[in-house]
Length: 464
Image 1: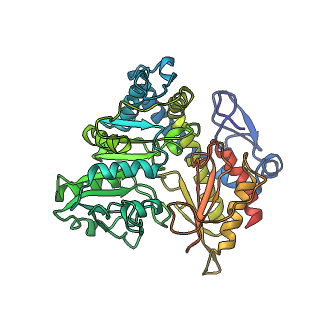
Image 2 (image 1 turned 180 degrees about the horizontal axis):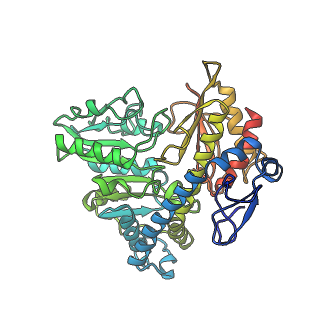
Image 3 (image 1 turned 90 degrees about the vertical axis):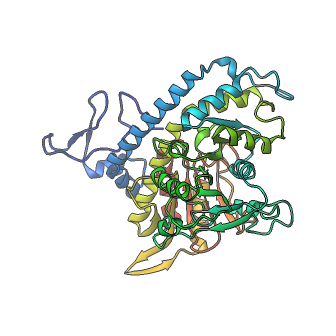
């Protein structure tokens, strides 16, 4: 594995500079290191296939920008840990009701809230997915007769039954409980429809749901500045309308988080960005204290709130350590998405986001269409399957297995998952997936080091 150190640059190599001797260039590092720039040398000694090696060489500036972001976010996390006075005694965990817990819950909640700029947070192993955490937040806000407005088009598949958009068979969706639901469709360019949003709220609109990431839609993910603008428009129409942000895949991708720009609650999963690839389970809700407590009551029961629930010590330590590592792991995932976009676009495949544009989540969509000779040919299901099979073959866990598309709880379509990960379902580790429906796009995410995606892409290019 390549590591950042004072001896060796972790960035892609720089191209030849005229002021240096022929055939030599220096890389930026703490000690002078010279590397030949001869193209054939690169291809012969590189662990990557030529297309990947060329992309790596071209992404120096983008990788350096990611490292600067990691440094800023690590500073924020470190300060929060210090302010919470995190100590080894907080890793002890607890059993049973959790009444004799040694302060780890409180310290973790305090640190997490400070990191995301919230009044309060609840970070718990009892949230078993991001959808579960988001559901607790929505049920905290909404009552019969209220309206939920999704302002970024359709929500993620797994929320459809929670809302009642897809039949929940009377199991207790929001619509079952008398909550109304509407959506503001996306604009033609795939972004928020700002003109429609200006007039979208009604007197009964109690909560506006903003999904930060693209989900399984071929659209742009939202920046925190766009979320800020949306919140301002919403609050101008109705200051009492509460804003809930589905923050999955967005944590630490920018230097600020939605509560810092006015979101009332955010929610997400610890086996995505904020778990740092080592949290074995869990999720979080953060935001205004009143509503965090209300969400906690939906997780547990009224009267129990945030002060109950056991968490074994090994899990509590992983939560703290994973949160501390998160900026670095997110940075590596961001580099991976940049590399996937660069390589796939260079081979003629359509990608979202485009190569070298700012990232607003850790998801890279690829291969919705193959562009050749001025015509677009749809990416067929077979190529989506081949892409995922190649990723699985290149994984550290389960490389001998073949992923099969099938029905998964919460999803409307058959989905194929390639996730040879140490934590089951972890998308902070390198993984990809996609629903078997038009445009048959593959969604790539995670990776504990960008070089893993560099190696995986070599296998992918052979397969598709």
